[in-house]
Length: 103
Image: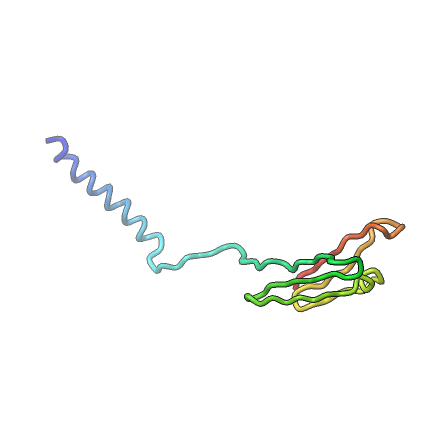
């Protein structure tokens, strides 16, 4: 007998809980916050004289090989997705950081 008297309370609770979900997003719009990021270009040195730049964009692979002397002379290397330049961190110029900026 007690379960029958509580049945309207249970049904009302279920209706209230379910109506909250339908009121939260009646139009079906999902709000997205964040970023979709592509992988960066890969810079590596296959030999003492060259630097290889590999980039992937829209499932397309581009590769460029650059003489290391260009960076050592202070030139900025530019491709479709990025630019790179050496920044010396000591006076002897035997330690440097390759700074890459993406477009």
